[in-house]
Image (tube, rainbow, N blue to C red; front, side, top):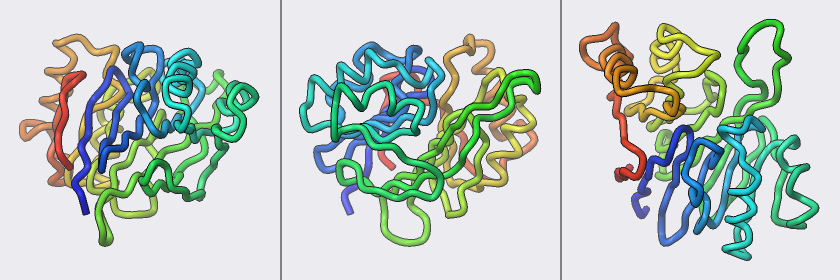
Length: 223
């Protein structure tokens, strides 16, 4: 099977490329203005503005009349009337094909920010890029969801108001990917990146043998 290319975008947004087609996940307000433009398919994990930006999604759908979006109900309701038949509502346990990528949906709720703040829905996406029992890249959105399937590549939310570094370390250990790439890092300064890199690297407590990698926005790698 043709290898998949991963491009890191701003904050929690990534683009996956294969066979001339592109799938973009979470082109929110902290990512580039054109983060979703050129996408054949877009996946959105939840409604928070750093993951969902209506203008960016409208620009993507208008730029490519064949582009489609898969997301949860709270986001789909904002776009489906303007783009009938091109916005699909999904939830935990669903599977679908988007722009040639096989996608599984895992998870239901956003991580707890504070007990006084109501939790919203959140879904993660496992995107298959190779044959066999592993070979998936998983984006959990704003949750530490452990999918009930092997994951080779974890898109790891390293920093958020709802997490602490010990939880991030334990999450990588539990998912047990081969490689963990940083996402959800838009609030980190260079000092913060250095600290998280040390904690998740060989001088930290250990992440179960997984390799930890940080890509700068715009950088790509082959999976």
